[in-house]
Image (cartoon, rainbow, N blue to C red; front, side, top):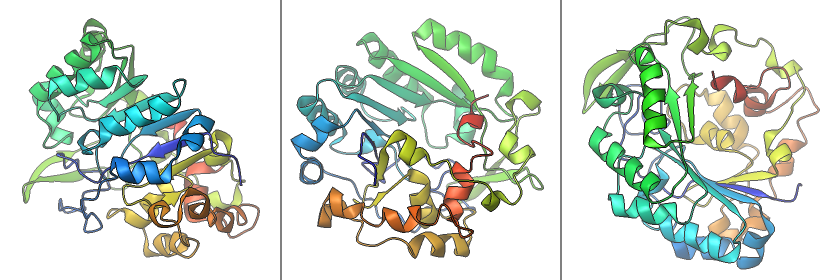
Length: 328
């Protein structure tokens, strides 16, 4: 087992949005039944991560599989707790930015190193994918965060309905004071069925289609890797010395391993059973971090065999870096 230097924390399952391709949403637009609305409290965090542990790591970032970190009741307190015990730690967050009061974002700007705002269009265009996210809330919060000295980055998922706005969005990002603008491709389309029906409040809404411009299309979707189990595993968790902690307190080497269990989208039962068969006593709220990572060796031991874990072959095979290829 590697020494932990980076923590990916998902502090809540709460989110105001219902984005069609998100793991919190079923393919027919309903809330993922796995979700119970749990959040990690500051009490939970203090029990799992003591001062010595925090002082020994280099980075903690919040990003959600099922929820948006900004809606964790103790989000700000958690960041402040990590900063208090490690003034040099790198702290960041990924968010849709459409909740909380602007004053809260001004406070956050004083604690974190940066925030990545996931904004997929301008005005009403953003809400085609980011369903439930109000544009005025996003712009008010972004401006307050940046004006308070916060370092902001903009991630822009590209679809057919918003590809015409990329250049304008990048221009606006510079005017607002974002330090980075990154168009992203989504890997969640099926090559044979590229149209994705979205839903809102129980009714069919827009059909979400991939961009028409090749430069913004997913290389992973257009050229899927066949027989990926035959390629060596190049584990990002080991390279980054990272763990992922879910809002329930369960610990995994990465967020994708958690997705294999929790997603209500295109995850096969075989994949779910594969990851479930390896996991044992991984709730850090119950057994502590050190014991909660004990099962990792069950996964690691299979990397050099013909029985590689499904999720490791999908996300960390040495042939195709699915994460790097998102950024176009």
